[in-house]
Amino acid sequence: MILAALILVPALAGLASFKLASDSTRRVVLALSALAHLLLTLSCWVEPPGPAWNGWLELDQPGLLVLTTASVLFLAGAVYSAGYLAREARRTQADADQTSLLFVNAPEATFTGCLLIFLSTMTLSCVSQHLGLLWVAIEGTTLASAPLIYFHRHRRSLEATWKYLLLCSVGIALALLGNFFLSAAASSTGGNAPSLLVSDFVERGPRLNATWVKIGFIFLLVGYGTKAGFAPLQAWLPDAYSEAPSLVAALLSGALANAAFLGVLRAQQVCDAAGLASFGHELLLFFGLFSMAFAAVFMLSQTDYKRMLAYSSVENMGILATGIGLSGIAATGAFLHVFFSPLLKGALFLLSGNILKHFRVRTIEGVRGAVTTLPISGPLWIATFLAATGAPPFATFFSEWLIFKGALDAERYAVAGLFLFLLTAIFIAMGRSVLKMSLGAGTPPPPGRAGGEPYTSFLPPLLLWTVALALSLFLPVAVRETIAQAARLFGGHS
Image 1 (cartoon, rainbow, N blue to C red):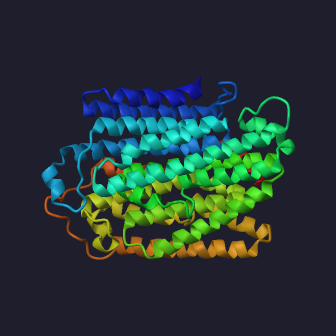
Image 2: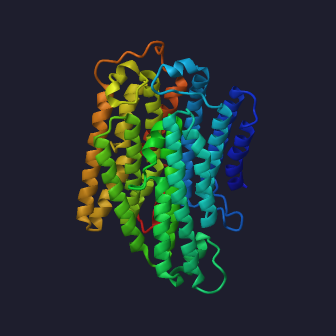
């Protein structure tokens, strides 16, 4: 019942939003739906729901971690959107024509409705234990989020949307082929026809055809990896993240990427059951380190701070893949990162929206003195950057340390050295840009842009940062056990 409510509440609210006449009513529906979704998600920690729909729906430990952070982030985005959408509604075409950004209003009904359906499809991705249903859910996230990227209806947002649709559609088509190959691997075991349930593949285990499993895993890794943002499959990502509204970019980075990564994890579960764990781990390790290196190179030369954050999301997926690829205690670090990093990455994107609103430029060189001109968002911009890049006492420090230690424990010294080097390079690249934007003499706002910071703009990222800090200092036993259990599914240990 709870699983159905988690999926249906935002879906029905989204459909209703298309028909509501009042924008203010729509914003209330968005906030209440987000709050209801979070309360339902938290109830799953108190009393885990059982399987539903013949096992097609089940909330396991990895799914619960991803769903929880997505729900928290969505509620923060819903609060942020109240001020954002009201401001966009007041903005005139004449005002848009005076800027290079050309913010052109899109119907708010479409935005709110698609945002809620996006949450519903993400939830379905988290609770799907059937590979076919998981494929449908992840494809649904693409269709629901495309209008969100196109919100400003500028030629650049149109280009970003088409890139997103085309490349993610190619990726999801490859994932579909991966499902076919896994089905072929199970068909050779005899008995009943394969059901595409993960539990069915695990039960058949060593009887699965190894060759078909390997081919299926590669297709699923490339297919879902395109959506998650692994390099070099992420060609759509910098454009989509930078052109979408900041609250949408926060959800794409902090929630959708992890939901797509769940698809890769389901494929790894099949590899593990078939006795091919090392095959999947080595491929994940390769994509993880390559993604981190790719992100480091582009972040060092980046001039647009929203694109810089987009490449930091590529790096984040690289960290997760590296941790799962190393297994052992590194897998525990990966799931610790899954739980905390989305909160901080989401806060960074929301803060980038505040900076963009004030300075009206996206270039790093065009922003100076954010700490003085934005007395709340400016310092929080620095604090969140430090937290997201692994500064203690935040849990991101411990997650990265566990992955590094996992490489040492496995005597993968070259991997450990490269991992540490890439983390350092990325910290320097981001730190140079963030500090340059934050310090110095404050840049005066454009004419007509003076004014304080509304609470709906700074409160959501502040709460995300605070929640991340509080949980880093006092991690509940239930969360700690869930992270450990999720890691054990992939060869991890505490």
